[in-house]
Amino acid sequence: MSLVEAPDDLSELNEWVVEQRWSDGLPIVPPTRERVDEMLQGTSWPADTVIGLVPPRNAEATVDKIAANAVMAGCTPSAMPILIAAVQAMLEPQVNLYGAQATTHPCAVMVMVTGPVARAAGVHGGAGLFGPGFPANATIGRAVRLIQQNLGGAWPGETDRATQGTPAKFTFCFGENEEESPWDPYRVQRGFASDESTVTVVAAEGPHNLNDHVSSDARGVLFTFAQTMATIGTNNAYCTDADLVLVMCPEHAKVVADAGFTPADVRQYLYERARIPYREWKLGGMYGMLDQPRHLDAADDDYPVAILETPDDIHLVIGGGPGRHSAWIPTIGVGRAAVRLIAEPDGTPVRA
Image (cartoon, rainbow, N blue to C red; front, side):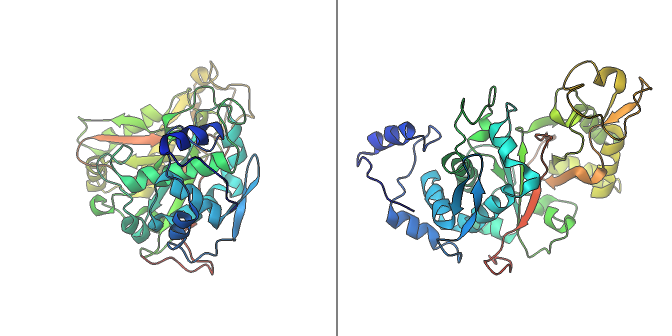
């Protein structure tokens, strides 16, 4: 990482970094060499390791540069293993980071962290998980965005062509409420061990509320979910070879699990019922812009168009606190989630 001369006064510094396009508009912590070296103490990865190239500028994401952006965002060293895995994940081709950086769609890079490393770093998955008050969530998500901007060159109105943008571009990181989940943790459902930790990354919109205060049975709760998801105003309705994220609150999850539903049952139910009649599907949205879904029968106006190719395209996680509000997170549609083990340089799991 090269050093540059910067103003000593903090107010002047923060004005200067905005002029340099190194800031998200909020105050930053100056990434002095000493602070970056301290941040690097949180990982065994060598500082000069190149994790990959961040599009569209394609600057190298070295561990040192990741640490510098982590300092600017206000992270602690415990965030470094998470950030390295998050950068690895968002650079996987299936995520389509180039598209996410340059699209007019209001998407941000969502970062979901689960496992012992998440808990040790303070990543929060309970009440208010998408909101303020949790330093690890706020700073890790912010660091990921700064990396997109400072290394990838995603500047609003230029390379970042988002029509309106989204507040999720400031930070979009959350954990899992394992303690109140009736099922195996998300990472275990995805084939990882319970003592391992993972980062899941996808280009996504902000959370959309799933409000069901009255259903006392599983099918009622899931019907509300399906009806909310099945809307022509999302990319998922037309870019159906994609995935989405479902964050179920503990109370909804308990109702569903008590009825004997497994996560696979939830995904199957939503796959079958989160559908839009073809006569409505073709009235707006993105109709005609893309290839028709493989499963579509265009000769039948009543044909129920699925918003997913398979039930497994739903990433189901338990999050939140008391109350009957869950959330679904629509995605960019032209990219898919990547799940990455939080690992040492030799590929072994990072242990908290």
